[in-house]
Image 1: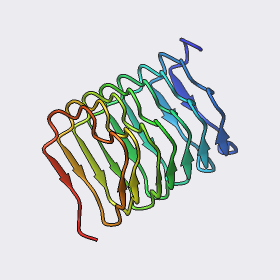
Image 2 (image 1 turned 120 degrees about the vertical axis):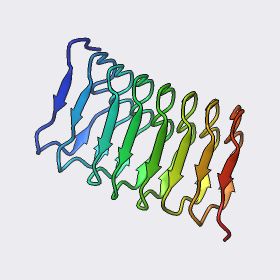
Image 3 (image 1 turned 120 degrees about the horizontal axis):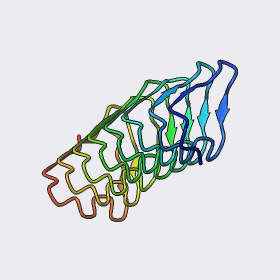
Image 4 (image 1 turned 135 degrees about the horizontal axis):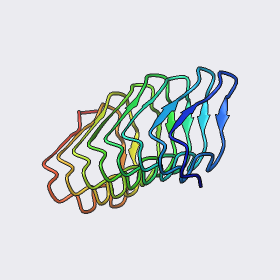
Length: 174
């Protein structure tokens, strides 16, 4: 843990960010990802309390377990075209995350993705997700709308548990 790092600018040579690399950097508010980065490890930026917005470029192909968990000031996250897989709990307990859009390129989507994102209101899937895994929206008390793309085959256990104001899940035919 480090409470003094405010900004991270990684060199172009970095291809992977390892587990817990910047976890607990409570003042970290800005991250610049390099063009050769392909993997963000599990809990790499967990508990970065000052991070308010996030853009993950398409050169990143996979984001590890709980990579941005408990980034409590995170309000928006942009996932760019090219990202293919999000492991379990990537944004769990990001208490101020309001909305997120997934690019067409997303193929894998882990469970507990938005667990306890209590202010999440809207989620858009722009590509074919085959499964909404277990508890992916559990505890999202303010979730109003989920917009799915064709291809959904399975909704996991308690996927929408405690989504008390949810009024629309748009599932296209097919």
